[in-house]
Amino acid sequence: MRQFEGAPVVAPADWVPGPKQGQWTYKDYVAMTEDGYEVVEGVLYMLPSRRPSHQKTIINFVRHLEDFVETPELGKVYIGPLDVELNPHNVVQPDILVMLNEHLDRITQTHIIGAPDLVIEITDSNTANHDYGEKWEAYANGGVPEYWVVTPEELTIELLILDGSEYRSLGLYIGPTQLPSQSACKR
Image (spheres, one colour):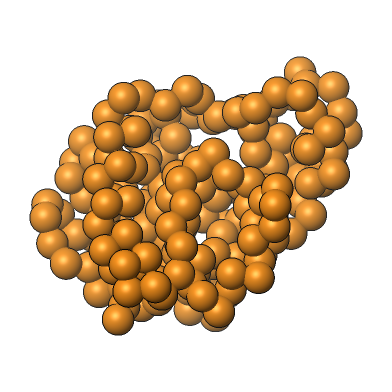
């Protein structure tokens, strides 16, 4: 995992009334009346508001993913915030996720239960340590087979695939390129 300098902006939300940190569950999380949080390993985190450049990056990725996933009817593409309950102590909100047809049964009326086939996080200095730290571990432990970390400021994408219980990098891709996706975008 990569580590980044500077204080993390994504931090445990210790001030929120509820269970002790490390003991939060999906049930506790949905009982909250506020948005902008996620639970990783039972710890409630407050997420920062997203910048316009972050949203634009998401839109650009979704346009391409729709061509590779939805147009040929291989599955569905979703954007956050959308709750993904990897297990009761890990409730995340990926920026973008793909559910292939064989896993559409994981989609409920309120959220997704289980691992998406692909998760994409758009990272920046506010979220990099969280995306390469706690979320990396949660996605690996939750069985997400493919995880992309996009850094728009550097024009890079790190493509990670689950190898056993750990992620293995297939490379750091720079600029416009075709990614060797192992799951969600492979036709």
